[in-house]
Length: 163
Image (cartoon, rainbow, N blue to C red; front, side):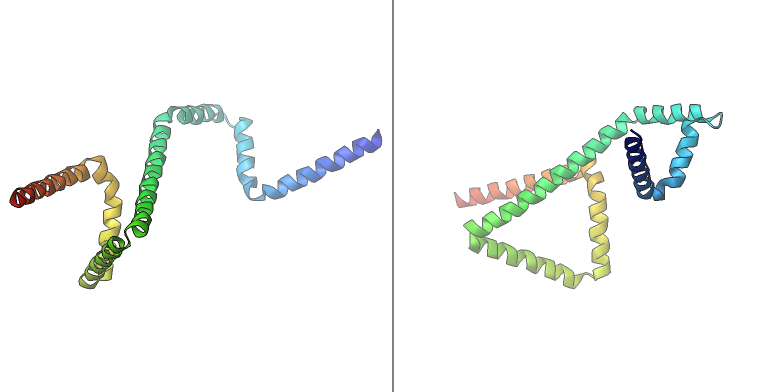
């Protein structure tokens, strides 16, 4: 029986030593948390209640965090969709793909040649950072709608000329 107790004690000591080693960087935090949880100061219980209440009152932030994650997933899906469409175009219509790539790369090269790299980088970063706000306030939708209407007008005018 004493041998079993000794073995159990040795196992406990080994596990304790292992846990101490894993939590070595968290020692100060754990000591402070222990003091708070044991209420070593009179203001610790109200602080605990305040923090817990704050955590439970932040469901709006959790919901917003969920929305942000959802939007990131949707954006990733759109990018993957465009990427797949590009490769589908490459496989199904290689000449159209080639012409699209040539025109796109020529446009990028022309813009890169005309605009200083630092300014171009500034404009790209600023645009990317303003994009969520522009989308949130409907500015992007507004101008895309205007562009679609103008393109439709031009297409209708072209059809009338062809008739």
